[in-house]
Amino acid sequence: LTGAILLDVDLSSANLDGTILRGADLTGAILLDVDLSSANLDGTILRGVDLTGASLLGVDLSDRDLSGATLGIDLSGKNLDGTILRGADLTGASLLGVDLSILDLTNANLSGQNLSDHDLTDVILTGADLSNTLLSDSLDRKDFTETKFRGVDLSGKDLSNSIFDCIINTATIRCNNF
Image (cartoon, rainbow, N blue to C red):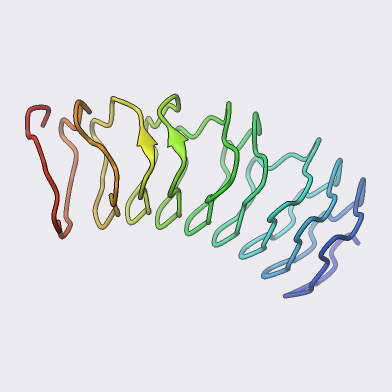
């Protein structure tokens, strides 16, 4: 399937184990429960794909554009260096052992995630949905413009030099770490 144009195609539950998708355009594809184990995704366009329940064992996601993708999958230990996740939905994704530092998570949905053990150094969280998310203690120098914090406990967090441009409804804020 090298170079194939598969826009908005529904490949739910397909077995694509070991398939060479180099340079394919899967923009908007529905890949629910697809087995992409050991697939070659070099240069594959994956913007807006739905990978909920997909198996990505042995798949390299570094330097991929997953903007707007739905990633309700196990990403444990995956190398996401250079991966674009702007607007991605990471609700329900397993991020255990994933290095999120330096990623652009602008407008990403991270609601309900446990990020307390993640290094968020240089992560861009502008407009991200962090509702009910557990965060690490050090959040200094972050741009939280338009970031959603519903149900997030920021007490005891180091928010030094962070930027907040938001509307606050019924919140308790203790300003001892700014």
